[in-house]
Image (cartoon, rainbow, N blue to C red; front, side):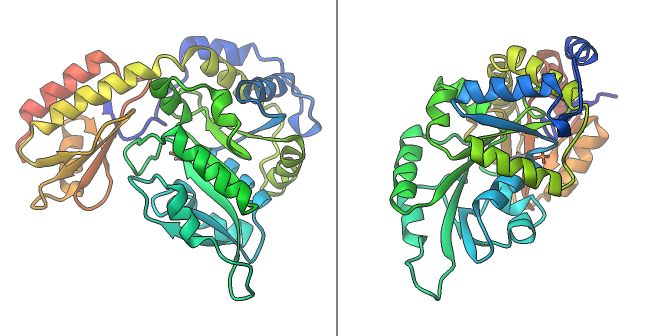
Length: 341
Ligand SMILES: *Cc1c(COP(=O)(O)O)cnc(C)c1O
């Protein structure tokens, strides 16, 4: 029986070379800021994106929530898309951690525009929350890995400057976008007050997200991380995996994108499928004929060794990654020939 893992790009396991790098890490106590490998990962990411400083956090959720808590206070509001991870998948943390309100917008597959945002910025009037933070996601997970046009981000940045709002990026899959657009990390770093970069999705590290910002912001973020219980000790073992991932696993994301396109073609041939959302990176979202329930189809495929995620009542998500090869792609083709809905 096959084990074809397409539920998420978080299932990757460290490669032998990555494990070697982890075993050889020079470590210390990071709460005392004495873990050299963690500091070196933080410096590397900060330099790559043109920020003063960086902070390695346990997860993307923790890094986003630290950023939101640092940027927004009680009585203020965060403007984001209704599909965004910070709103949908972080346990209500905007409210629970920052005590902030949310203004939800309906963008195009999770992508906002400056004009959509402008319409909901609150005037200075006691009735309203204070519009403090705009948060974008690139690529958008719920949008099927959709990529932002950098020109739109530039307009959003100008709007934020004009209205004295901060701009945060949930960049869990930012490298997937950069590999496609060929834009540089520096160009994107120049546009945001803070960015989170995930090491454990497509880049294949076992855990870790780096939060980027200026020195004062990261100083505050370090304090909030401690309060969240996220101060860690010999984090250099994890940082070493992150350094290895940044050095070796960025360019290969293009292979994941090619395989996602090939999966799209394969699944579009099934008669239970009505539509495949446009594939831009490593995520494929399949729309089923409404006669079929995503949960049922996912169960049937799972029994054949093909693991996928229900993503709405009639939608299924597939995600390609470091541990899904061309050989696995051929096996998916075989599984689908055995499949009878
Ligand atoms: C995975 C993900 C995160 C962070 O998730 P963790 O599991 O907490 O690391 C944040 N944003 C997006 C868009 C994601 O896909």
